[in-house]
Image (cartoon, rainbow, N blue to C red; front, side):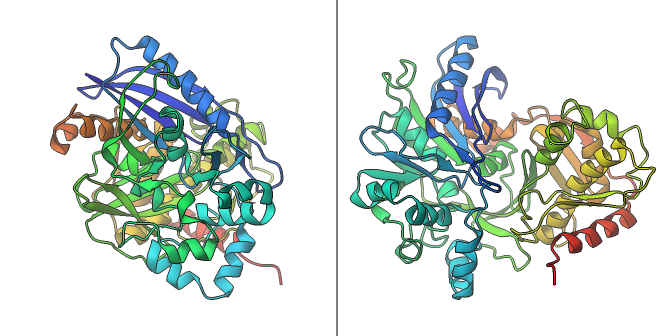
Length: 487
């Protein structure tokens, strides 16, 4: 038996066919367009996401030896999507998680004293990152689209709920706790939409999806809508929680970091809701069909892999992202150069949406190699900032995945900065793997999490060497500059 995993990411959709022994038998990938109407704004056309999903799945299924037993979904979180309940057409583009246009809305709510109560209910903070402020912005600035929401004709959701609606031809409007917990509308303790929060952000509760467990019966694909297939949809999770599941971090205290466009560090806190006073988020990791919820602490870093992309696309310093390792290895260190990649503000643990990137320490001897190496160092420093406040020390191991985890120099720098081992799995697409594991668990392909643990295979373990604390102190000083306000 096998499982079809759909990973609807920020820049494209990946589809994997995962076998019972945890191998990837087939894959497909399709990019979709990014829209930047104004500085700090990021939008997606929902129809583009759907068409990319069909294309990626078609490619993966064509290369598979058999029709999969079930479907699992994982997705970019927090992105706000609207669509017509009947036609499934989107009345406007989705506002993406990276979008910062709602900073003023969040600041207004904060100035009126709402943040403590919002944080108490949700485990989050008032930041443009999350879905609710995006919906409030649409209500204020796109009344034509929002009128459909208030009339009941248009519904709202995140990318997971949009894809499930499309896969089922409109039969199911649902989401899961891991995605719901990223909206600022879901109560960690209640496990439900909070009427108090819906009122605060002006979101009609009737427009929101129903909340279902992360694995088990969720819906069925409609053959007329989805490549002629009638399959159970039996697993769904937001991308970072899916990666935690795919890395088999099922024990309390186990930590993973996904190095993608941004980097996201999660630690499993079990059935206990653990609050952070150090800029971390409390979130749902997953919920079983029994109703038992597993929670996590999360540190969300907005720009890591995207900084390497900026070196490539914005500055033309490298030809490919993979080239960054070879270029950085041509110098012993960054030559005193420090890069703070606050290209869309700073996430955990600083949470400053108005921070902007800066580069310090440039001399006449500075070369492109120094800047490239400083970029890799910055990623390691950002992750160290989060891990140190998350674990109150050093975890025994950090499990790494995502595209940038293929960079051996970055992984070694990370182990050195943390003073702990970094383990990279053989399959680094653990986000999609987590969706497959959840779906397979929900459909009986695997009988337990112990079975899933046995499929995890180590690619390489990076042991810590010497830690360059002087470079880290330069980083901390540069962070202070990036977050300073002009007098």
